Image 1 (tube, rainbow, N blue to C red):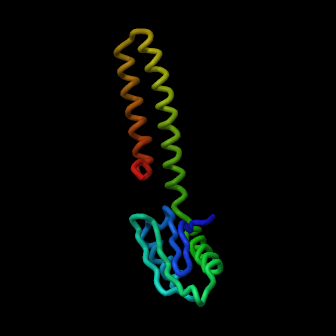
Image 2 (image 1 turned 30 degrees about the horizontal axis):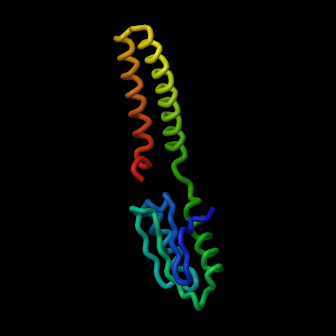
Image 3 (image 1 turned 30 degrees about the vertical axis):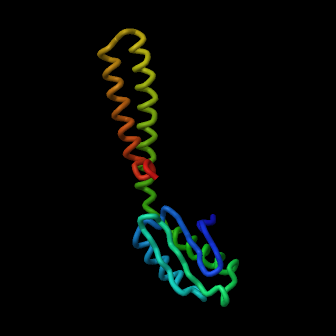
Length: 142
């Protein structure tokens, strides 16, 4: 999977969400600095990007892109905490079912004229929505 977002002879920019972790940025910087022809690397953990400057006269652009892509793939293929990811996905799935169920119940209760239970199911919907938004908080304002 290509993570190269811009490439001109002598310069390559890589972007990936996994590069927002400073420790991964540091390991990738070491791997990229070891590549032939690399002059400098500069990373930005806030944006999850790395810029690689290399000697275009020494290494062809296509070859350097391949080497950089392999180094990035090797670094980002390191296992993450799969248990935490699975737990988050299960919680989010339950929250989505809760939103769907409480919305249906709330609408049915509103149509029946039962204001008290309509309000209660509305509160459940808002609580489930809060869990869903908290799960996706990093992606909300991209």
